[in-house]
Amino acid sequence: MRGARIADLVVRDRRLRWPIAADLGARLRGRTIKDIGRRGKYLLVWLDRGALIMHLGMSGSLRVVNDTPPGPHDPFDLVLAGNPPVRIRLRDPRRFGALLYSDDPLSHPLIATLGPEPLEAGFDGAYLHEQARGRTIAIRDLLLNGRVVAGIGNIYANEALFEAGIHPRRPAGRIGAGRYDALARAIVAVLSRAVSAGGTTLKDFAASDGRPGYFQQQLCVYGRAGGACPRCAAPVARLTMGGRSGYYCPRCQH
DNA sequence: AAGTTGACCTGAGGGC
DNA sequence: TGCCCTCAGGTCAACT
Image (cartoon, rainbow, N blue to C red):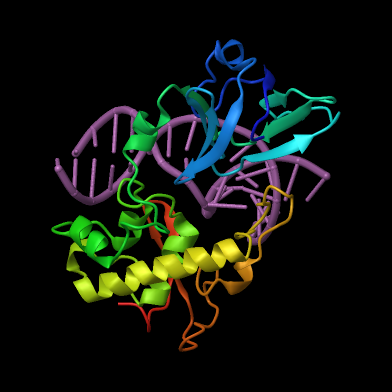
C-alpha cells in the first residue's frame, strides 16, 4: 500500500460501527498513501495529509482480492491505482469494524485517549501501579481499558495475569508495586511471544499473508477451563466478569 | 470519577 | 433436521 495512489473506494454497505462517511470516496480519490501504522488495535493509513483510521472489530479482515465477487459481509473495497488495480477488501460479518478519516488522526478522540503502547517505552510496572492507585476495578478489566494501556484484549490479559500469578478479579488498587513490575513484564513477554507466533487463531484469525497464528498452542489458561495448569497441574477455572469469560489457575493466582 | 451494564451484529456449536 | 440458547477475539456510550 505504501506509495500507492487511491483510485477509488467502493462502498457496498456503510453500516459499520460508525457509518462510513458519504463523502469519503470523493475525499480519498487521487490521494497517496504515505505510510501504514497502528495505535492499539486501530490501523492508521497515513495519506499525504491526514489518515484513514480503521478497526477490524472482532470479525474483520483485510485481503487483497482479484476479481472475486464480494460476499454479503464485504462492506468496502479500497482500490489502489495500477495496472491492474489492487483491490483491498474488508470482510466484517459482525460489522464491529470501522473506517474513518481524520486530518489529524493523533488528535482524534479514539486515538488521543489511548494509553501507552505496551511494547514501547513508557510502559512499566510503575506506570500500571500509578494508574491503579485507589481503584477497585478488577485487574483484568483495568488491562482491557485502552485508556490505561493500548491494545490488550481478553486473551492476552488473561494469559499475562496467569504468568504474573495475579487473580483476574483482584482489585487493581490492592496489588503492590512489585507485583505490578511482574505484571508489566508478563504483558511484554506474552505479547512478544504472541507476535512471534503470528497471533492467536481461535477460529478464523489470519495474518495479512493469510496464514493463521500459532500462539493458541502456547495458551496456558485462556479457553482451557478444566485443563491442567501448566505450572501446578490444578484444573484451570473459568469465571464471568462483565459478561466476558476469564480463565485462571485457582492455585497459582491470587 | 469510577464502575457497571448494554449496545452493536452475525455465525457457530451444543442440547433437545 | 430444526429450533432455541449461549457464546465469541472489541470497545464505546449510557447509566448508576
